[in-house]
Length: 117
Image 1: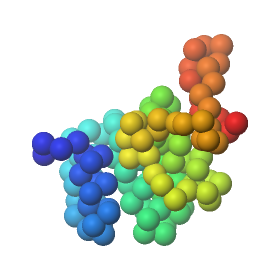
Image 2: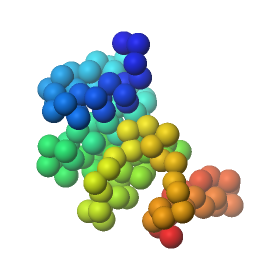
Image 3: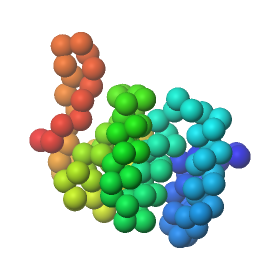
Image 4: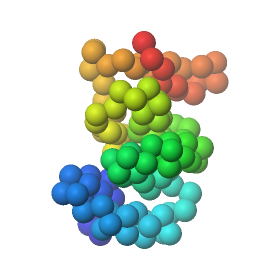
């Protein structure tokens, strides 16, 4: 696959090709079992399919695998508050402007956390 999995999934989801997206994600997950990316994308897919509980489980799994992976944290926080109409498929989607309800705060161990403003 020449495209990044995030771009492929975004395209498939936008075209409502959910089964195809799920197959791609399962293949990617098999090849990258310790990556947070497929869990974040599964979370998005499940949220779009109105399976909020399973979506949150995948967002939490992505966060547990890599707490520095910002898209999973943003999707998890936004979906817990039921205010999400856009998803963070990849880190580039997390670039915030001034009207964002989130900010990045570093703790004493120099670990970044996204928190509500």
